[in-house]
Image (cartoon, rainbow, N blue to C red):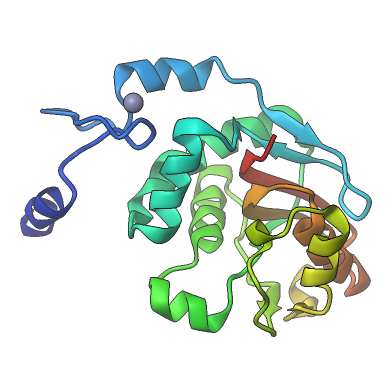
Length: 213
Ligand SMILES: [Zn+2]
């Protein structure tokens, strides 16, 4: 209760998406956004090293600003609103899979931020979808952020050799759901899916919270 009170002082309840104040509400979304979310069709992206990526939202407008607060504004609790949206798109569009993993941020970035935004989503998805959430990848090199690069070829080059597979015995022969926050050209998910399949994963499907248009 004390923690809840302090959190309310720090972060007075506001809608996770449009950021309007939510007086006397325990819901994370205002009624307008709760309805809007239901009307969104999941966005699909077909990959080379993964069969399909599904995203419940497009990365624009209030979604973009909300994810920005989630990643850079300390709102780690937004994951509790985002994960169920992802889970319903995953149920609707992707076939069955054995385990969930995520695209990790670097150790350095994680220690500054205090959490890994995609790991939080993967863990909550594991609870909702009743699948184990595993750490299968490690970011072994620091690279410039993908958002500063426009072209697909530049983005693919920027992520090459940046990740490596860990604990391959945990995912060998399994179909893996790979989770990230945003998909743009698919370069990061391609690179990570390739690493997972080369290390023995049978198949990779992907889900992100949002897709850049
Ligand atoms: Zn709202």
